[in-house]
Image (cartoon, rainbow, N blue to C red; front, side, top):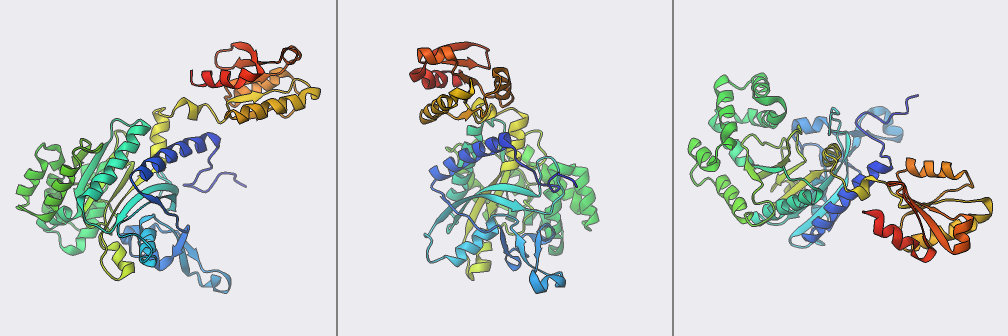
Length: 439
């Protein structure tokens, strides 16, 4: 019997959990400082809640749950694991519309599931860190959300990220100008969204397979390069003969109001950005870093989605940070603070002999009361074995209560990082460790 977890999922060992909790802590702190409030929803939804919200490609990736009990033999599904956190939010807004404020700002950090093909940074079970604002079309929403995301990434140590931005209405205009019939628009958007993964030749090949004409493919790929120009908005607006088009005006507003936020200098227009999900209606954004196929997060405006549940239009906009990809990049680049990497224990208290167990237990309690993370070796073992155990757990300090130390009211503290050992008074043991932990 294999002991590996299912493909596309992972077990999280202590070091993994520490890294995850560190990133989640930064995300949660910033989200709350921007006025977003927490929300949680069930791991699974009624299947009709999810189907039809993500486009044909998305529908194929939904993990369906078969009916149970006497209906099991039917092979039909009535529930499904949530695909993202946005559609559940839309359902919640419709369900609790009379209990929520006029402008509902929520954040949600929970796992989602997709029956996707696993790859580097892509899993079948993964966490999303969402923030959304419901109830207004103001461009200040996009500006604030991207400001929060930029602040999070900067605090985590990212310096080379950019915020790719585009607009679904501009994409529709591009497809129309390239003479693609409306029936091909949805498939074309899914293909264009792969440009950074499969390249221009790969996109051209897939468009051809979808029935897009050669002239249409050439026109689209020409416009996809507009983001390399300094005057991209003006150039593309002239190319498309779209003076005063609302989508271009909206992008300019977002960029203008973002100028003095942490996101202001990070924006890069990218006509190839499509965001394959079908519910987007306005500005769309993604976070890109070098050497990563895919993004660290994405989102955009979806003014029609809530209306599917509510029965009336209600504007909304959101963004989702991909926790797993952030962790992959930060681990590869060694971006985590020493306190996160070195382990979850500050001091190991040793057992000198069977008769001194209670004294060691008391010392461990004293150090914990002082705020330190303390492990107590459970047996009266050879001191060398206790040191080896501490080293294997990357514990920086070992506390020793030998006969001489106890007689003097002291504790011997050994720093396993440097090899130095010093005896300090028992009352000063905690402050001694604290002063050297980050040294």
